[in-house]
Length: 621
Image 1 (cartoon, rainbow, N blue to C red):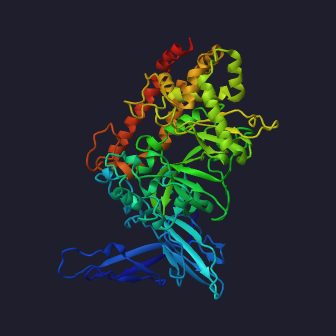
Image 2: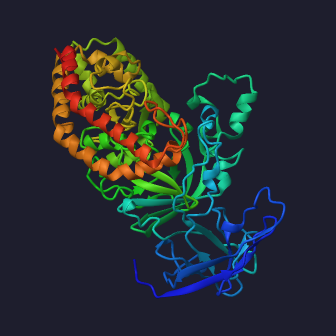
Image 3: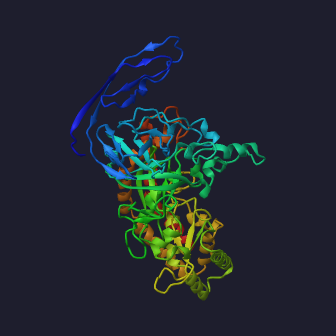
């Protein structure tokens, strides 16, 4: 942090609290400052009370100017040690309007007439976090406004209007004051600020984060069923498509410095996790908002294309993922598993942890994650995205109906063909990349992914062949994703001794059908045994797994525990199911639970190889 010339602005005044009315203070610079600490009514009091208070705010003379949309700002977005006054100037004849609540400014917003005090807001009441209509009714008894004070940023959005009424675009700034993102636990982490009108998330009719009108309408309809699983209950947050996309300004910070800023669209992402209090987001970049692509290295150089090894640093979209099933546990299972096998001949997703703020309020740790779509496949394999077909959960996700019909025909053919005939197996190898398939299912079986087979499976192919591109050869290849429902996350459902081969064979999707049929072929059995043992002994070796787990534990423990406490741990009943819930869980309780989940993960890996390789022999011999 730079050493700024410092000046002290002493704001002294008398606050008189009469029937809940707060008196405004006037600063030495003419800046109006409200003391929110004395703005509450003393309930039950029949006569007015007088309170006096001295406020002393030390400000810094910070000059980090920048110009945008015909406005000059004296300080750019970032993290600063001390409060300061933000000055906004514009050419003569231009009027500036701004907001401090995340909404888009217009001519009805605050008119800029004097410098704006930017200060530490950590003790101010939460606005976004106060909403509780964000979880299903059965969880509302447990979930309440979080009883936790976290650092808060100030978000200021400004626009200018000339004398002819012509408006400029909107400039969005985020300011962290004090130790908000300079804390040691955030060191090296990307900080993402999402700024949008409160109603875009929490409005009853249009808000994408709430139960909202969708739930109310369902409850009044003939479709209402009180026994519906909580994750299946209709709600605004379960709606999909462009109609449920909302505008957002997104800013990226590294080491307290703004490194990228764009306007985009956001939607809620996920399956069952949409019902969680902390929800995942899809972020989309479109010309409608500004840039059609995000040109920024989301993954700090760690994600390379599969075809050429170039760094991936341009994105049509990406996800901010809450950890899925692992959201209340370790929050890194999916990243850990995919990182251990990212060199294999199937596609994995790049991930990197970050801290998210929404309108300046702490929204916890998220995982920046590559979004599975045709652009993602095109980037990694060099196939034009309009020539990509992707199948997800045996349904068409991207591509043409003609190629999907080809997949359906393949699925039927696999089910009725005798692959003990070597010529039939060779035909299968011409249509499916069997190396990709064997490595892919070996990984899923080893970790005992219990939400896979029929669910959470994906494969893709190029719809047109291209002799210059080895990945545009017409073969189906596989994609690993959502792996966290595994490795003893729920110890009665996924555990080290489980026969996951049997589970796959009992599944009804294409992945299981292909395994059942291919096992009839001698070549496949031999190659599969060799592939599985290679992954078990090398990718998931004790040394490799232990080193990776230790790295993740050191990186995630504090930020994950803070997030779990913020959204789950401080509320009665909102703890992982294998713990007994108690009122008023402390951060220490949450960390203790976190450490227990960590030990369960370690025990799974320490026992898995010996157990699963015994099961392997039943199927390959």
